[in-house]
Length: 164
Figure 1: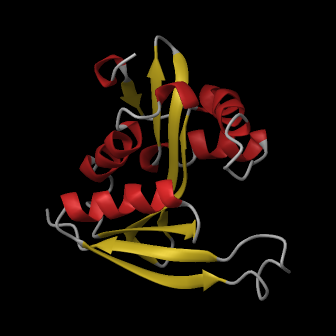
Figure 2: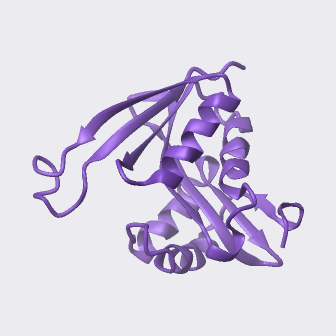
């Protein structure tokens, strides 16, 4: 399996079940309902990307334009199947999202990451470096204040600006 055999495309409603299955098989990720993934694949297909190899879903990034700041793409979740790791798939999916200009180019990407998620920090730091952009990190959702100590604090990673 290599990166050349991966097909990247906009997800469709029929992909929702398979995206949900992919995410449920990755213990590090917070699971969503199948209905949530169905909506991501249909309502937010322009700001999400699906990766497949020989028809099997092996990667998915869900995102949306922020309602009060449409120049910002918020990346909700990055999922890569175990068998597709180590070939730069997450980076390739992010690059495809940046290349889409629907309805207009994004100036920044935002996402939230827990402090100990080294893989996600590496991914988004690499994106910032490769785009010659800045990554600013700040606490957005506190473990005590927002999660009643049931989830680790989430830090906002804001990357940009991206030049056209």
